[in-house]
Length: 218
Image (cartoon, rainbow, N blue to C red; front, side, top):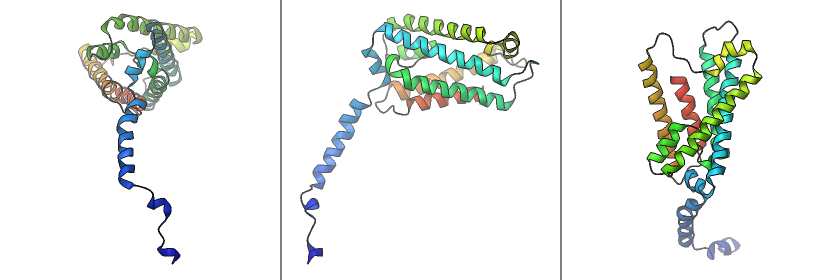
């Protein structure tokens, strides 16, 4: 007899209402919780966003310069495949962390080309662009300067201060085309994951992986 009695919990639970409630939550509340990175950045002053961009570029350039010291030698030997992977992972993980940590403040551009792409898509006021560019360039300069102060002269010479150099076998326009395609991939990923969607939880990871792939492929 006891096995024939229905559970009072299931008797009082309306499955249809529960599904409707779950559906409404997934549409309305998720949109609120997962508001886009670029929309959230509008809640901060331009000065605060400039500081975030400065810190991001300072860190990114510093890491990029210092990792070059690890993968090069004082004899200026050619960089092997393992070193390219090292550089790709260092840059990719760095931008992943920076976008996750600072993206909600400034949008996590850390690149003048990205700022221009975001502004051109109408996702930020065009008059904010010069302020972003100034912060990015200043942050990159300070990050590079700080790494130069730390490095010895031998490390500076062997790593070329972290500079990206064109392969002697390639022409200038070939390098320009490869950089243009890599920049397009990066901007494309940012616009589709952090600017034009309300489900941008994986945006920092997608952006970091895109940067790593760009380095590996160019």
